Length: 341
Image 1 (cartoon, rainbow, N blue to C red):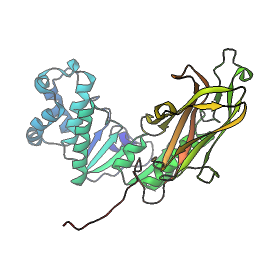
Image 2 (cartoon, rainbow, N blue to C red):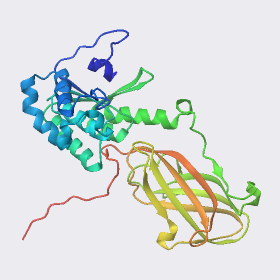
Image 3 (cartoon, rainbow, N blue to C red):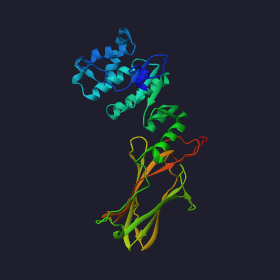
């Protein structure tokens, strides 16, 4: 879609009407001629984007400074690293003073310092009235930049409207509906015994559920509310020195671990009796914002843990937020004003 709007390819049907100057941040540096120098490529690239030679002359030093190319600007682009070419391509696009900026998941340019520099520049462009058309699978990137969104699935419009609503529908379709993703399945109970038989395990997780303070089962935890993750276990024999580790990942963004808890860090171990036992992992004032997450939990023996008794791996769950909570994490807070004496 972005390539059609930018004029790189023609649509099979229909037409595109554009008002204003468009700058595409698509496959940065891919359009550079490797034989030409960086300087020559800047003039060619920015002229294609609609600038005159005089306008490019005015912007040239700013482009080179932003891209952090230095003396390499007069070397052939074929001698550049992919990161250098991408930085120069990014700098060319954003210095055309576009009315519309087309962005195709290209903000991972260079190191974290340069990415922050790019983010600040994009924010400045937006404040000055540039419209962004951002295509991304990263929900947090979308939420931080956009106000209105559309969700396309194989070219078919699934949703459009305010960005929070569209992202919510995208995540629910992607992660919570079996038909949307073949890898979605019921949580798998994994054992760690040598012969692979649960009968040889000392402990088996037989069920998990979320509960509220009253012990009532809840299907969907809610931001800022107290929640308990409960694990029903079948214990085959007396076990002492048992600990629990819990990690939570976001299914959006980069899938990084955003919460990690270990009962050993809190000086907490358990003594389990033979029979049915329930672990209750209490999480007061849940900080997770609206979205889809997964948790992995290990029940371990020994201190430090010698081996895993059982675990649940990457169990997906949804968190909803009350109206007015739109951030990735929720910090409980108070507001006040006082007289100064």
